[in-house]
Image 1 (cartoon, rainbow, N blue to C red):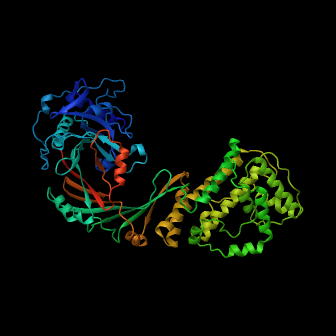
Image 2 (tube, rainbow, N blue to C red; image 1 turned 30 degrees about the vertical axis):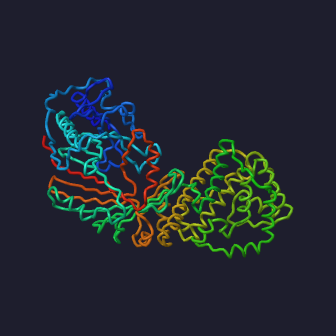
Image 3 (tube, rainbow, N blue to C red; image 1 turned 90 degrees about the vertical axis):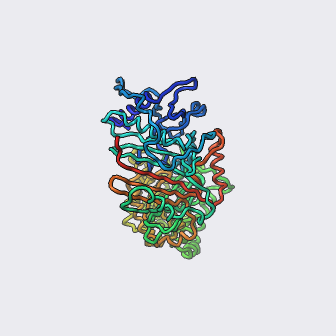
Length: 636
């Protein structure tokens, strides 16, 4: 928050401190209804964000304890913002005082008159864990809270609401208040929320239940709708479902690619029902370039080697290959020479291999291109050089072998690289063996690597019927001859051209990984793959490729409908909404295989142990979380 919003938050903090703050030997606390409370300003947990009006901050109320004192609910996702009991932010100015009589808070009962308040007694309260499934970092996966008895939660929330109503009239925006409950009432209440904004008061109840063994034991959809319509006026009723299916997952989100189907449709027929034929289906894809499971992983490794050579031009340091076997570069070059002499047999073997996309994926894209010339094979050998000296000597050996007519390599007419041009001129007697000095050998290696990998991608996208050469033209602009014949100087323009080529090839690789994932795991037909290829390529023009890249693609339901027969739903959420004039009500039921909120029997329980407990859950067990939000006009 900034500007006026920050001043308003400060004013709320100042008022609540004056009204509720008390001190003891254990520290500062607030007392409401005989309960000692700890109040902090926190980032909103992801599970509450949608019912928090998408406001990023909350006032969190929990029971004060020695555990809280030592570690006062500071989850790892909490921003460095002041507690309600810290000195207010005044920007060097003395905050204006607001006069409020403490007697104004002496009210009895709940002004909200909630029908589900019960006196369950005061049991020993234990911290509980809030799972944060949308968080990526391991240390951000849980939030530990010390709850308040559920029977007192609404009373406490009402007290704070009344305190807020005593603020100056120019404060019209309030940070939502959330009270942490113990879940020991009949409804399993874990959060009670209040938010007052622009004359409207929203009251939100978060509950959980389960586990339910099997789908048939889950609460029926008719029961949820009946519960929703039993209280309050109803004018319009709408039910919407969002179901997610994990098609490809990884134990480590930072290292592995993932593919999830998100399905949305209206008017579901039953709990956990499969997507309707008219569903809106989104494929959420996250590709990690170095994922070893991808069929194009070998191409990424080759591209990474090329990137290392380009970086070496600037840094002066190159990570050379470390040979594990006893063969030498000379042996590999001799094998290439033998293959050239045995060209007819080699050509027949290449012709026997298919070049459609499925066979490319099955063959992991290795050696599928038929029109490889001598420089392509030369790159496959030279990238394994163990030093600059070995690279220089190997290139000299190749040029001398061609000059002595020991081998007559095939150089494609479109090959305009420095190495390709030199080899043609040597075979035609127009040029002698060049002097390889300075960085010329490294420039030659980078150039033939760029051209070889570029032609690999063009061949895959074209022969796989994924796109056209015209659509690829932006990514495969020519960089041949940038080194200059015999030039060993490092020029900034040359380095920029090489780096640009690497960036473009990286974009192509990301697009290729997306297509491979769609074909491998969703079995999409070629026309659909072609459509998404163009879509992803257009997106990649606007972004800088990273190690991980995410995409959201809209699918036709018919393309993946059969797939749902073999997939298990990851989460299933139904939203029932109704409204009448200024009154509105939302009931959200979230069904998952692991609970959003996990009770803990010990304040020192390790969150990692709780994560392991979730893994041990029977896959046929389901947990329900309910979010009930009622909004009406606020009358002060």
